Length: 179
Length: 127
Image (cartoon, rainbow over all chains, first blue to last red; front, side, top):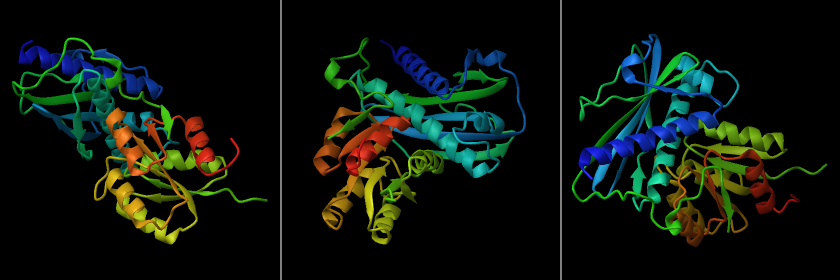
């Protein structure tokens, strides 16, 4: 499998993790082509988490307007921007956490950084490593959430075609184990 | 009237702390919050009557494993149960937490009824 094919598989996997999380939060995300996305203005929040493992490293950034993050927030409506930046960090943390759990079944482990966020007017992102790469774009209630994946793979990185044995499977989201 | 037990929530996300606190308070528990492992250790000094700790893994300053190691090596709270609450579902990390003395592992996003069941059992209350 070429590096490009591996990157595309990983991007699809991570995008799917974000979509699953959004659905669990009660949203109905519509995945669209980046070129067709509606342009939105106003206050936006970007939150990112870095990650790395054997032969790969990268980061994932979620970008969304504040009203969309407020819409997705699990607690009663709030206007405190600190709550929304904090929630954006948790969203990216849980998206990448799911990604890591999925990759474990392929024998790929990784560690995550503590998420960080930024709030700004007219915030726009671009890919520094892969200028041609488009983000995953989800439309929720007419507002747009973008997921930007940056990846660096080196030749030692292996991504099997299918999951490995069941023993490597991670605990599912929402599960509880008492010892 | 009996007073419900006290739970310490350690998580760098204010939103997650509030989510957990709402779940526990609605079931009658008292709640103390901390933003990282260091704050969690300090909170345990101030609140010696905590019976259960719910602790995130990936945090700044002092992460969940560092907290667990420091907490266990201190030996000051032998009756307190620690449950890790994290996005990570790695079997290796779950086993590592068990070896380090944790009493449970919850993968985020948590289910309120499961979280309450765990707290009830570990604080010795009827389920």
